[in-house]
Image (tube, rainbow, N blue to C red; front, side, top):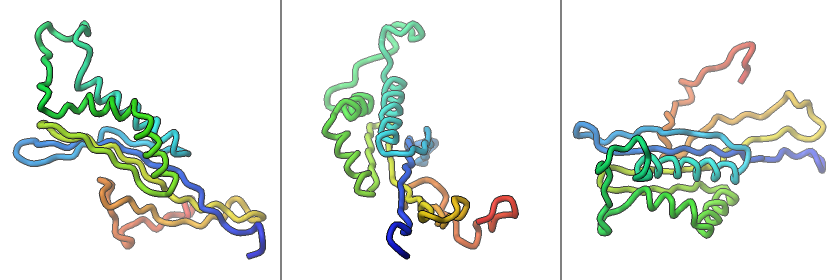
Length: 171
């Protein structure tokens, strides 16, 4: 191809939050949310919002009107404290920049915090999107099948199982 006609790979980002813990003698993973973002800053912002949401759900303000008096207690110092760890990650600029840098280099970010009840995983990864070459029709795109990371709970479909498309949704 001539100069200025090469295809470029732009990136979008996927992010997810998953809780994992014991239920009836087996370990169960429960997706708590997922998000697609146009840039890594937005993906990490969403993960911070989710980390705060989980922390506030696990460790609400003791003065909240809906909590009966005497319901909440302090976590002993010797035990892991998931809400505190999630809040620390949200407030730690150095760790935020490290996550941003991983995504900028095309690598996945993964944070897992755990206590005696289970674990919470926050993950984000880049998804490559091939943009059309300059001077071509904007309706002609090169498509690649989405391959989730090996650690993702997304189903890994065999290529023969994927839908071939239809006249209104060509592949």
